[in-house]
Length: 121
Image (cartoon, rainbow, N blue to C red; front, side, top):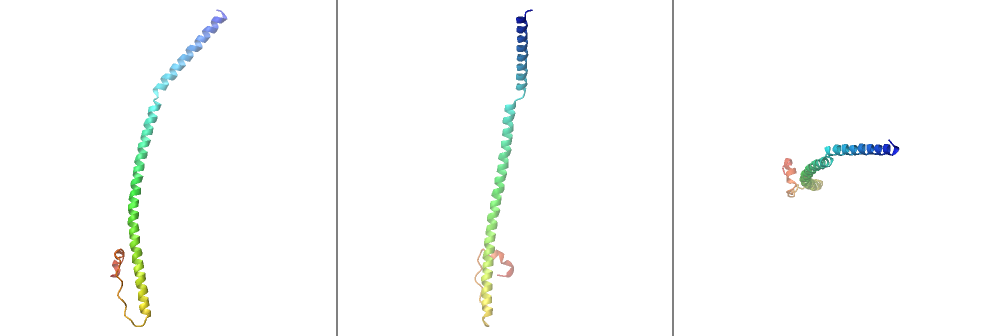
């Protein structure tokens, strides 16, 4: 065999090995559907995030309802305190004055009435 023939046969051997390697890589690559699994994972993650966002929105809405109820309660309690403070000042002024009768209390505001149930007003 001549040197040209040996070179040609070695080039043919390298080409065959390269072709077989390419085929093996292609077969292995087709077995792993990476693109579809990534899309499926993205869909699952997106659905979980949507559920979590909906749950958090529901919690926020319920917290806002609670807050509005608490604000109304605080407003009523503030009115009750203001009423009692004014009534106390009036009583102190009458007591400091000499021998007069205690005046009738001012009408209790409606929003303060639930917080004054235990004092008979």
